[in-house]
Image (cartoon, rainbow, N blue to C red):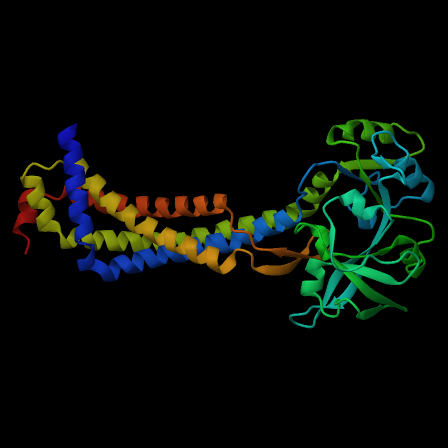
Length: 396
Protein backbone atom coordinates (compact mmCIF):
# COMPACT_ATOMS: atom_id res chain seq x y z
CA UNK A 1 0.00 0.00 0.00
CA UNK A 2 2.80 2.43 0.92
CA UNK A 3 4.60 1.68 -2.33
CA UNK A 4 1.35 2.19 -4.29
CA UNK A 5 0.73 5.56 -2.63
CA UNK A 6 4.32 6.67 -3.19
CA UNK A 7 3.96 5.80 -6.88
CA UNK A 8 0.84 7.97 -7.13
CA UNK A 9 2.58 10.89 -5.39
CA UNK A 10 5.69 10.58 -7.55
CA UNK A 11 3.75 10.38 -10.82
CA UNK A 12 1.42 13.22 -9.84
CA UNK A 13 4.33 15.53 -8.97
CA UNK A 14 6.02 14.59 -12.23
CA UNK A 15 2.86 15.41 -14.21
CA UNK A 16 2.33 18.74 -12.44
CA UNK A 17 5.92 19.81 -13.00
CA UNK A 18 5.52 19.31 -16.75
CA UNK A 19 2.43 21.53 -17.03
CA UNK A 20 4.52 24.63 -17.99
CA UNK A 21 5.68 22.71 -21.05
CA UNK A 22 2.01 22.45 -22.08
CA UNK A 23 0.87 25.81 -20.75
CA UNK A 24 -1.08 26.74 -23.89
CA UNK A 25 -3.49 23.82 -23.79
CA UNK A 26 -3.57 23.80 -19.97
CA UNK A 27 -4.54 27.47 -19.81
CA UNK A 28 -7.18 26.96 -22.51
CA UNK A 29 -8.76 24.11 -20.53
CA UNK A 30 -8.71 26.08 -17.27
CA UNK A 31 -10.19 29.17 -18.92
CA UNK A 32 -12.95 27.09 -20.50
CA UNK A 33 -13.90 25.64 -17.13
CA UNK A 34 -13.68 29.10 -15.53
CA UNK A 35 -16.19 30.36 -18.11
CA UNK A 36 -18.58 27.53 -17.32
CA UNK A 37 -18.40 28.23 -13.60
CA UNK A 38 -18.79 31.99 -14.08
CA UNK A 39 -21.94 31.54 -16.17
CA UNK A 40 -23.32 28.95 -13.74
CA UNK A 41 -22.79 31.21 -10.74
CA UNK A 42 -23.94 34.34 -12.57
CA UNK A 43 -27.25 32.93 -13.77
CA UNK A 44 -28.13 31.12 -10.57
CA UNK A 45 -27.22 34.18 -8.48
CA UNK A 46 -30.23 35.84 -10.15
CA UNK A 47 -32.52 33.12 -8.82
CA UNK A 48 -30.87 33.27 -5.39
CA UNK A 49 -31.26 37.04 -5.22
CA UNK A 50 -34.86 37.04 -6.41
CA UNK A 51 -35.74 34.28 -3.96
CA UNK A 52 -34.08 36.24 -1.15
CA UNK A 53 -36.16 39.30 -2.05
CA UNK A 54 -39.29 37.17 -1.77
CA UNK A 55 -38.28 35.62 1.55
CA UNK A 56 -39.28 36.80 4.99
CA UNK A 57 -36.44 37.54 7.38
CA UNK A 58 -36.90 37.25 11.11
CA UNK A 59 -39.77 35.57 12.99
CA UNK A 60 -42.45 33.98 10.84
CA UNK A 61 -45.26 35.72 12.70
CA UNK A 62 -47.06 37.63 9.92
CA UNK A 63 -50.12 36.17 8.21
CA UNK A 64 -51.92 37.28 5.07
CA UNK A 65 -55.64 36.70 4.57
CA UNK A 66 -57.18 36.52 1.09
CA UNK A 67 -60.57 35.64 -0.27
CA UNK A 68 -61.07 31.88 -0.51
CA UNK A 69 -59.92 30.61 -3.91
CA UNK A 70 -57.69 33.62 -4.67
CA UNK A 71 -54.08 32.86 -5.58
CA UNK A 72 -52.86 36.46 -5.34
CA UNK A 73 -53.90 39.81 -3.93
CA UNK A 74 -54.89 41.00 -7.41
CA UNK A 75 -57.68 38.41 -7.58
CA UNK A 76 -58.82 38.73 -3.97
CA UNK A 77 -61.50 40.87 -2.37
CA UNK A 78 -62.58 41.54 1.23
CA UNK A 79 -65.32 43.75 2.64
CA UNK A 80 -64.99 46.18 5.54
CA UNK A 81 -66.91 43.78 7.78
CA UNK A 82 -64.63 40.89 6.85
CA UNK A 83 -61.42 42.78 7.64
CA UNK A 84 -62.95 43.81 11.00
CA UNK A 85 -63.64 40.15 11.85
CA UNK A 86 -60.09 39.25 10.81
CA UNK A 87 -58.57 41.91 13.06
CA UNK A 88 -60.68 40.74 16.03
CA UNK A 89 -59.71 37.06 15.64
CA UNK A 90 -57.78 35.25 18.40
CA UNK A 91 -54.02 35.06 17.92
CA UNK A 92 -53.65 38.63 16.63
CA UNK A 93 -51.05 40.77 18.40
CA UNK A 94 -52.47 43.88 20.03
CA UNK A 95 -51.19 47.19 21.36
CA UNK A 96 -52.84 50.00 23.29
CA UNK A 97 -54.01 51.39 19.95
CA UNK A 98 -55.70 48.15 18.88
CA UNK A 99 -54.97 45.00 16.88
CA UNK A 100 -51.88 44.91 14.64
CA UNK A 101 -53.77 44.36 11.39
CA UNK A 102 -53.70 46.27 8.11
CA UNK A 103 -56.44 45.93 5.49
CA UNK A 104 -54.81 46.67 2.14
CA UNK A 105 -55.31 47.36 -1.56
CA UNK A 106 -52.88 46.35 -4.29
CA UNK A 107 -52.94 48.01 -7.73
CA UNK A 108 -50.46 48.30 -10.60
CA UNK A 109 -49.32 51.61 -12.02
CA UNK A 110 -47.00 52.37 -14.94
CA UNK A 111 -43.92 54.46 -14.21
CA UNK A 112 -40.73 54.90 -16.29
CA UNK A 113 -37.66 52.86 -15.45
CA UNK A 114 -34.63 54.87 -14.41
CA UNK A 115 -32.30 52.92 -16.72
CA UNK A 116 -34.28 52.80 -19.97
CA UNK A 117 -37.23 55.17 -19.62
CA UNK A 118 -39.67 52.42 -20.63
CA UNK A 119 -42.71 51.81 -18.47
CA UNK A 120 -42.62 49.28 -15.66
CA UNK A 121 -45.46 47.79 -13.61
CA UNK A 122 -44.94 49.14 -10.11
CA UNK A 123 -47.14 48.00 -7.18
CA UNK A 124 -49.03 50.82 -5.46
CA UNK A 125 -50.24 49.52 -2.12
CA UNK A 126 -52.87 51.14 0.06
CA UNK A 127 -52.23 50.35 3.71
CA UNK A 128 -53.62 51.21 7.12
CA UNK A 129 -51.83 52.85 10.03
CA UNK A 130 -50.55 49.58 11.54
CA UNK A 131 -48.85 48.39 8.32
CA UNK A 132 -45.28 49.22 9.33
CA UNK A 133 -45.72 47.67 12.79
CA UNK A 134 -47.27 44.56 11.21
CA UNK A 135 -44.28 43.93 8.93
CA UNK A 136 -41.81 44.64 11.72
CA UNK A 137 -38.68 44.96 9.54
CA UNK A 138 -39.51 48.20 7.70
CA UNK A 139 -37.63 51.38 8.50
CA UNK A 140 -37.85 54.91 7.11
CA UNK A 141 -34.47 55.81 5.64
CA UNK A 142 -35.41 59.22 4.25
CA UNK A 143 -38.24 61.69 4.75
CA UNK A 144 -41.37 60.73 6.68
CA UNK A 145 -44.39 58.47 6.50
CA UNK A 146 -47.40 59.60 4.44
CA UNK A 147 -50.08 61.61 6.21
CA UNK A 148 -53.51 59.94 6.43
CA UNK A 149 -56.09 61.38 4.05
CA UNK A 150 -53.55 62.96 1.68
CA UNK A 151 -52.24 62.00 -1.76
CA UNK A 152 -48.83 61.22 -0.32
CA UNK A 153 -46.71 58.12 -0.75
CA UNK A 154 -43.62 56.56 0.72
CA UNK A 155 -41.47 54.53 -1.62
CA UNK A 156 -39.55 51.29 -1.12
CA UNK A 157 -35.78 51.60 -1.54
CA UNK A 158 -35.79 49.16 -4.47
CA UNK A 159 -38.49 51.11 -6.32
CA UNK A 160 -36.70 54.41 -5.65
CA UNK A 161 -33.52 52.90 -7.07
CA UNK A 162 -35.01 51.46 -10.26
CA UNK A 163 -37.88 53.82 -11.11
CA UNK A 164 -37.42 57.43 -12.23
CA UNK A 165 -39.03 60.35 -10.42
CA UNK A 166 -39.45 58.77 -6.99
CA UNK A 167 -37.09 61.03 -5.03
CA UNK A 168 -38.43 62.66 -1.88
CA UNK A 169 -40.12 65.95 -2.74
CA UNK A 170 -41.05 64.93 -6.29
CA UNK A 171 -44.53 64.03 -7.54
CA UNK A 172 -45.86 61.67 -10.18
CA UNK A 173 -49.22 61.55 -11.89
CA UNK A 174 -51.27 58.40 -12.30
CA UNK A 175 -54.71 58.71 -13.88
CA UNK A 176 -56.38 61.85 -12.58
CA UNK A 177 -54.32 62.10 -9.41
CA UNK A 178 -50.94 63.50 -8.42
CA UNK A 179 -48.98 61.70 -5.68
CA UNK A 180 -46.22 63.38 -3.69
CA UNK A 181 -43.24 61.32 -2.52
CA UNK A 182 -42.60 62.13 1.14
CA UNK A 183 -40.42 59.23 2.30
CA UNK A 184 -38.30 56.21 1.42
CA UNK A 185 -38.30 52.98 3.43
CA UNK A 186 -36.21 49.84 3.50
CA UNK A 187 -37.39 46.34 4.29
CA UNK A 188 -34.33 44.16 4.65
CA UNK A 189 -34.15 43.65 0.88
CA UNK A 190 -37.62 42.07 0.80
CA UNK A 191 -40.38 42.43 -1.78
CA UNK A 192 -41.92 45.42 0.03
CA UNK A 193 -38.94 47.48 -1.13
CA UNK A 194 -40.29 47.26 -4.68
CA UNK A 195 -43.62 48.85 -3.72
CA UNK A 196 -45.08 52.32 -3.24
CA UNK A 197 -47.28 52.77 -0.17
CA UNK A 198 -50.09 55.21 0.50
CA UNK A 199 -53.18 55.51 2.70
CA UNK A 200 -55.75 52.85 1.79
CA UNK A 201 -58.55 55.34 2.50
CA UNK A 202 -57.13 57.62 -0.20
CA UNK A 203 -56.45 54.84 -2.71
CA UNK A 204 -59.99 53.41 -2.49
CA UNK A 205 -61.81 56.38 -4.08
CA UNK A 206 -58.91 57.05 -6.47
CA UNK A 207 -59.44 53.59 -8.00
CA UNK A 208 -63.21 53.39 -7.38
CA UNK A 209 -62.87 50.50 -4.91
CA UNK A 210 -65.66 51.71 -2.63
CA UNK A 211 -65.19 50.26 0.85
CA UNK A 212 -63.45 47.07 -0.25
CA UNK A 213 -59.96 45.71 0.25
CA UNK A 214 -57.97 42.88 -1.30
CA UNK A 215 -56.01 41.47 1.61
CA UNK A 216 -55.39 41.80 5.31
CA UNK A 217 -51.92 41.55 6.82
CA UNK A 218 -51.85 40.54 10.49
CA UNK A 219 -49.09 40.48 13.08
CA UNK A 220 -49.58 37.40 15.24
CA UNK A 221 -48.98 37.25 18.97
CA UNK A 222 -46.31 34.63 18.16
CA UNK A 223 -45.36 32.35 15.29
CA UNK A 224 -47.09 29.50 17.16
CA UNK A 225 -50.39 31.43 17.18
CA UNK A 226 -50.86 30.89 13.43
CA UNK A 227 -52.91 27.69 13.74
CA UNK A 228 -55.25 29.26 16.28
CA UNK A 229 -55.71 32.31 14.07
CA UNK A 230 -56.25 30.24 10.92
CA UNK A 231 -58.75 27.88 12.57
CA UNK A 232 -60.77 30.80 13.95
CA UNK A 233 -61.13 32.35 10.49
CA UNK A 234 -61.67 29.24 8.37
CA UNK A 235 -64.36 27.90 10.73
CA UNK A 236 -66.22 31.21 10.95
CA UNK A 237 -69.39 30.88 8.81
CA UNK A 238 -69.32 34.64 8.16
CA UNK A 239 -65.99 34.40 6.38
CA UNK A 240 -64.78 32.65 3.25
CA UNK A 241 -61.07 33.28 3.40
CA UNK A 242 -57.68 31.73 2.74
CA UNK A 243 -55.04 32.16 5.46
CA UNK A 244 -51.30 31.87 4.78
CA UNK A 245 -48.12 32.76 6.54
CA UNK A 246 -46.48 35.66 4.73
CA UNK A 247 -43.46 33.46 4.00
CA UNK A 248 -45.66 30.80 2.36
CA UNK A 249 -47.45 33.39 0.26
CA UNK A 250 -44.22 34.98 -0.99
CA UNK A 251 -42.76 31.55 -1.79
CA UNK A 252 -45.82 30.78 -3.92
CA UNK A 253 -45.53 34.11 -5.73
CA UNK A 254 -41.86 33.60 -6.59
CA UNK A 255 -41.85 29.89 -7.45
CA UNK A 256 -42.52 30.17 -11.19
CA UNK A 257 -39.77 32.64 -12.04
CA UNK A 258 -37.26 31.06 -9.67
CA UNK A 259 -37.82 27.61 -11.18
CA UNK A 260 -37.43 28.96 -14.71
CA UNK A 261 -34.17 30.78 -13.92
CA UNK A 262 -32.72 27.73 -12.19
CA UNK A 263 -33.70 25.40 -15.06
CA UNK A 264 -32.38 27.83 -17.67
CA UNK A 265 -29.13 28.28 -15.76
CA UNK A 266 -28.51 24.55 -15.45
CA UNK A 267 -29.33 24.02 -19.16
CA UNK A 268 -26.94 26.74 -20.35
CA UNK A 269 -24.25 25.56 -17.95
CA UNK A 270 -24.63 21.98 -19.16
CA UNK A 271 -24.12 23.08 -22.78
CA UNK A 272 -21.03 25.07 -21.87
CA UNK A 273 -19.77 22.26 -19.66
CA UNK A 274 -19.91 19.92 -22.65
CA UNK A 275 -17.61 22.25 -24.56
CA UNK A 276 -15.27 22.58 -21.57
CA UNK A 277 -15.24 18.79 -21.22
CA UNK A 278 -14.02 18.38 -24.78
CA UNK A 279 -11.36 21.00 -24.06
CA UNK A 280 -10.22 19.09 -21.00
CA UNK A 281 -10.18 15.82 -22.95
CA UNK A 282 -8.09 17.43 -25.69
CA UNK A 283 -5.65 18.83 -23.14
CA UNK A 284 -5.19 15.55 -21.32
CA UNK A 285 -4.95 13.45 -24.50
CA UNK A 286 -2.26 15.86 -25.72
CA UNK A 287 -0.46 15.56 -22.39
CA UNK A 288 -0.51 11.77 -22.58
CA UNK A 289 0.63 11.76 -26.22
CA UNK A 290 3.53 14.11 -25.43
CA UNK A 291 4.71 11.86 -22.60
CA UNK A 292 4.21 8.48 -24.20
CA UNK A 293 7.85 7.43 -23.82
CA UNK A 294 8.08 8.81 -20.28
CA UNK A 295 4.99 6.89 -19.21
CA UNK A 296 6.27 3.71 -20.86
CA UNK A 297 9.65 4.12 -19.14
CA UNK A 298 7.93 4.53 -15.77
CA UNK A 299 5.84 1.44 -16.46
CA UNK A 300 9.01 -0.50 -17.37
CA UNK A 301 10.59 0.60 -14.09
CA UNK A 302 7.73 -1.00 -12.18
CA UNK A 303 5.05 1.72 -11.83
CA UNK A 304 1.59 0.18 -11.92
CA UNK A 305 -1.37 1.00 -14.17
CA UNK A 306 -3.58 2.34 -11.42
CA UNK A 307 -1.03 4.95 -10.19
CA UNK A 308 -0.70 6.13 -13.80
CA UNK A 309 -4.47 6.45 -14.14
CA UNK A 310 -4.88 8.29 -10.84
CA UNK A 311 -1.97 10.66 -11.49
CA UNK A 312 -3.41 11.76 -14.86
CA UNK A 313 -6.87 12.23 -13.34
CA UNK A 314 -5.42 14.24 -10.44
CA UNK A 315 -3.64 16.51 -12.92
CA UNK A 316 -6.88 16.99 -14.84
CA UNK A 317 -8.84 17.77 -11.67
CA UNK A 318 -6.14 20.18 -10.51
CA UNK A 319 -6.46 22.17 -13.73
CA UNK A 320 -10.26 22.05 -13.43
CA UNK A 321 -10.28 23.22 -9.82
CA UNK A 322 -7.92 26.09 -10.63
CA UNK A 323 -10.24 27.14 -13.45
CA UNK A 324 -13.31 26.63 -11.28
CA UNK A 325 -11.89 28.70 -8.44
CA UNK A 326 -10.96 31.50 -10.85
CA UNK A 327 -14.43 31.44 -12.42
CA UNK A 328 -16.14 31.43 -9.02
CA UNK A 329 -14.03 34.36 -7.81
CA UNK A 330 -14.72 36.32 -11.00
CA UNK A 331 -18.46 35.66 -10.69
CA UNK A 332 -18.47 36.70 -7.04
CA UNK A 333 -16.68 39.98 -7.76
CA UNK A 334 -18.86 40.73 -10.81
CA UNK A 335 -22.31 39.65 -9.63
CA UNK A 336 -22.62 39.57 -5.84
CA UNK A 337 -24.76 42.52 -4.76
CA UNK A 338 -25.45 43.66 -8.34
CA UNK A 339 -28.78 45.47 -8.25
CA UNK A 340 -31.44 44.70 -10.82
CA UNK A 341 -35.19 44.48 -11.33
CA UNK A 342 -37.39 41.95 -13.06
CA UNK A 343 -41.05 41.08 -13.57
CA UNK A 344 -42.64 38.58 -11.23
CA UNK A 345 -44.60 36.43 -13.67
CA UNK A 346 -47.30 35.58 -11.15
CA UNK A 347 -48.18 39.20 -10.31
CA UNK A 348 -46.73 40.96 -13.39
CA UNK A 349 -45.20 43.54 -11.08
CA UNK A 350 -41.62 44.77 -11.03
CA UNK A 351 -39.48 43.39 -8.22
CA UNK A 352 -36.16 45.02 -7.36
CA UNK A 353 -33.50 42.66 -6.00
CA UNK A 354 -29.75 42.11 -5.73
CA UNK A 355 -27.84 39.18 -7.22
CA UNK A 356 -26.73 36.83 -4.44
CA UNK A 357 -23.62 34.66 -4.82
CA UNK A 358 -24.09 32.38 -1.83
CA UNK A 359 -21.57 29.91 -0.32
CA UNK A 360 -23.83 27.04 -1.42
CA UNK A 361 -23.71 28.32 -4.99
CA UNK A 362 -19.91 28.58 -4.91
CA UNK A 363 -19.61 25.03 -3.58
CA UNK A 364 -21.91 23.78 -6.35
CA UNK A 365 -19.75 25.58 -8.92
CA UNK A 366 -16.59 23.93 -7.64
CA UNK A 367 -18.34 20.55 -7.77
CA UNK A 368 -19.23 21.24 -11.43
CA UNK A 369 -15.59 22.04 -12.23
CA UNK A 370 -14.37 18.93 -10.40
CA UNK A 371 -16.82 16.77 -12.34
CA UNK A 372 -15.58 18.23 -15.63
CA UNK A 373 -11.99 17.59 -14.59
CA UNK A 374 -12.78 14.04 -13.50
CA UNK A 375 -14.47 13.15 -16.79
CA UNK A 376 -11.88 15.06 -18.81
CA UNK A 377 -9.05 13.06 -17.31
CA UNK A 378 -10.66 9.63 -17.11
CA UNK A 379 -10.34 8.40 -20.70
CA UNK A 380 -6.85 9.88 -21.35
CA UNK A 381 -5.74 8.27 -18.06
CA UNK A 382 -7.02 4.87 -19.16
CA UNK A 383 -5.28 5.28 -22.51
CA UNK A 384 -2.01 6.13 -20.75
CA UNK A 385 -2.25 3.02 -18.57
CA UNK A 386 -2.96 0.76 -21.55
CA UNK A 387 -0.04 1.91 -23.69
CA UNK A 388 2.01 -1.17 -24.77
CA UNK A 389 5.36 -0.65 -23.10
CA UNK A 390 7.54 -1.99 -25.91
CA UNK A 391 5.74 -0.06 -28.66
CA UNK A 392 5.69 3.15 -26.61
CA UNK A 393 9.44 2.95 -25.93
CA UNK A 394 10.11 2.78 -29.69
CA UNK A 395 8.19 6.04 -30.34
CA UNK A 396 10.31 9.09 -31.14
